[in-house]
Length: 378
Image (cartoon, rainbow, N blue to C red; front, side):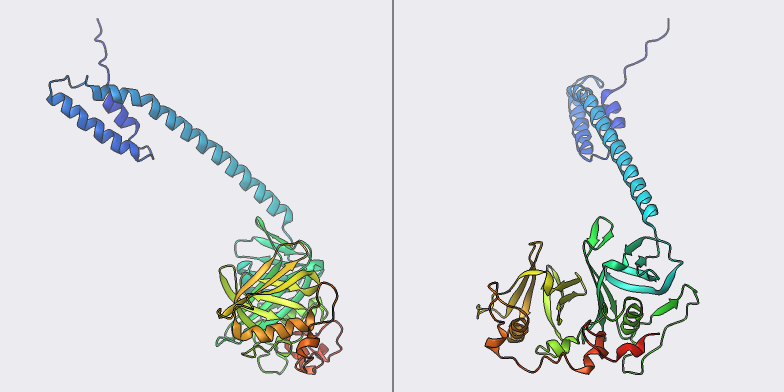
């Protein structure tokens, strides 16, 4: 007669069952069970038949149930992740644009919005295609390019921003949408521009004979201007519109948790480098200066409400700039009841040099101006 197999020790079975379980609590449970087992054995109980064994036996189905639930959840997550990845890959493939017909490509441009380095392909049909080293693309249709600006920060690194404001819903970037692009260039940066898709890799160092004409930001801006035209590219030099206390055409401000430069333009404002924003006065429903009456504060805020009703607030602007900002806004804003411009209250000063011919030399000309900046066009 065959010998009946001996029942396995319930504690040993549970220990083996939870040995590789990611739930760390099982380790503490097993220590307590083994301590209890030793105590009962020392009291005269059988080595395989103690109350600790009964506890271990009761925990076995619980361990099995928890493991089954975890496996099911993991399988569901993996299936969904795979489906999402396939959907994203399919969408990316379907939306992928050919860059062979590019008028020019600027290599390795450092963007703050979108964040990262991209090759900027400007297509002959006016589309702008940004492509990173992984091959991911962001496609901006030419008709959505509303404004292209070159804005100098005036810092020690000679940092300049090239800001591209978009129309409509902007451009898709992953799960979010971009309404403003912002590329950042320092004085020491070099820019490689390849024309006509010839791929010669030649560094575009052509200047226009002026100081700073080979600055990477200026080269990138001029290349964009050749494709999008002077009506889209450029604005009056912000310094001519708003000098401020430092004469830079902008003030330091905070948007959310990010500190940046708030530029006051002839037609609106721009903020950069991050989060990049371009706001045209035509799109605003309301504009307010906040905390201006709080004499005990060293800063004030500027709130802008676009037509979609979501207020945009630029905060922590130095109170030293309050008079300059108020004068700037008074010249460009009227009250809701169409009252005369507040410029009549502050006086129509002569520092609004929009007719100065030097304005076009900074970032291009206004759509309604007739400057002599066309000699930059190829």
